[in-house]
Length: 216
Image (cartoon, rainbow, N blue to C red; front, side, top):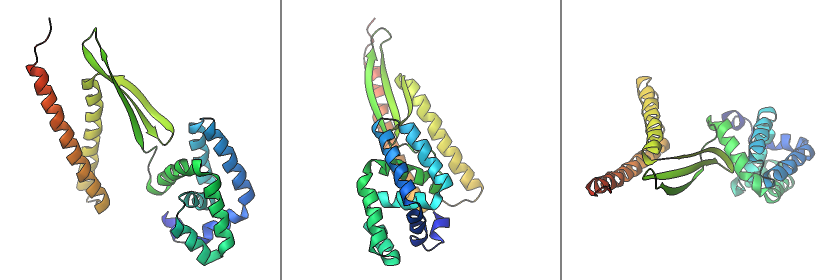
């Protein structure tokens, strides 16, 4: 949001919202209906399109949907109570749109794409093959990104690809003397420690399985 912040934010973006409030509310109403009907990919597509063609109005709505008292306070300070109340009404009327707008805001501001916000996992067992199975579904908000089912070694193969890609990205950053901000580095350390803990448990379970006699 650097280009938005460079203006008299939030006044500039809110003024643009006020100029096209009626059309924006019509869009939000339609998006909410699409969301209720489960058309989450269509909602994501249209919110992205909104951000592309009406950037300032998009940010005004996205920030309103965070229901931030700080944001509403800034609007009041710059434009008065009336505009702030209109944005509060947006947040109260369309709370189901908070997540897709926040995700697209991340995409626009931070160069993300379909950030994973959750994962559903179930396990089963294939008796004929004598192999456990793991089914998982990755979500970005309400939108399903990926569904898969595989054996433990197949799932770990996918995980190893992602770890390798992470190492590649960090190596490239080091080679090009790119800095990593402290928040990202701190979170990265936490993820590494969590991964090491899970790998320790995996090692123990594999060792236990190796000691367990195999039925002939």
